[in-house]
Length: 391
Image: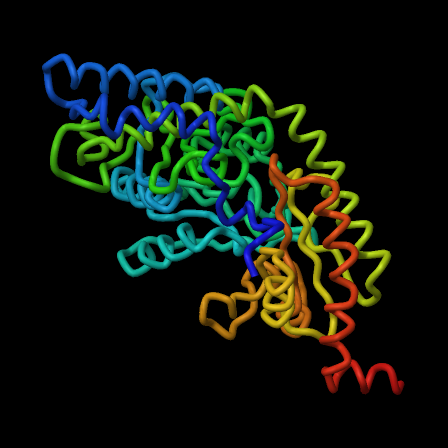
């Protein structure tokens, strides 16, 4: 069945109509290479610098502190590996958390194989970093703290300003993976004392394959990709002008509409969460109920498998995702859900529904109408549920 209701916006979002209109001319009319000197190239260069300002304005940065990349994963790699290499003479210790995106965790594992030490902080049952544990983890050789702004699975927002203040006090660089946050909640790198920030276009209505990294002026960092002199020699490769233009426009629109959109999505999210918890027994909300992304609903259901739930939802035209990694070919449950204390069986039975600007109250009502029967159908097939009911 064709998807009627899309509730997996944390995975990706459709390109906004306004963004598409802004991008299209840069495929055929203004196709010049921004590194060239003739007129058509200067049009591309001008558009790129306009987008750089739009992205900078969205996070309270200066345009010269924004570098365009291919997406959030590249930005994360650039932040961690770039700082590690540039600061290796000062120290070899990095602090992060157990609930980071794999772009952070796998990069940290790579660095561990190359002489760096990484502390992976536990989080509380809501998915939040404990500030006292973060402070205790700091050593004289600590060069970087990397804590995601908001979690992509459970939606919990971290105390970013507090972490930034602590990092500055200790003279340590602070990076945040803000892929899920930019354009959805207020982000200001100056007020929050963030030194490096990763973002991705396709999470806020821009095309896939474009992202950016904010690097505070004065931060020591080595390039990840070598070649030409693009991006002030920090990121070689011919600039993706259509993508860059799209990211700039999407960031500008998202920030202009942020408060109105956040208020509407928070109301829809809470209706969805409360409706599911009321209608379906043996269910629990994952993540912080207050310090949470406005469109994120992540709920675990005891006695069922998340993958089966996704297939039945898809048959009704509802696109969602699971807290279980089995949808990507692994039988292991989500590392995030295990980190907040869920047992394996509950982590396998999780559902993530993520809303964005195009979702409606009618769609939420439809999900609340159909989901209870799906969960009940799956539970009736579960020996564990049968044993529980007998007891």
